[in-house]
Length: 100
Image (cartoon, rainbow, N blue to C red; front, top):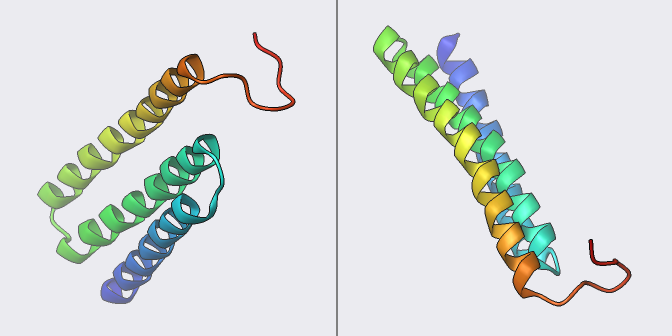
C-alpha cells in the first residue's frame, strides 16, 4: 500500500514539474515564467521528496527529506523574488503599469 501511495506522490511531483517546464516554455514574459517555475517546481519537488520518504520508510529518510523540502520551500521563493527585483530595476516599465 505504501508503494502505491509513493508512486502516486511521484506522479503528482512529476506532473507539477512538467507544468513548471511548460510554463517556462509557453509564458511570454519573465515575470510569468518565474512565477510558473517557482510555484510548480516547489510543489513538484515537495511531492517527489514525500515519495522518496514514503518509499524508504526510515526515520533518517524522513528527516533528510524534510530538511530538503524546508530548504527548497525557503530558497526558491526568495530566489524568485530577488531575480524579479533585479529585472524590475534594470528594465523599463511594462506597458500599462506605473512606476512606484
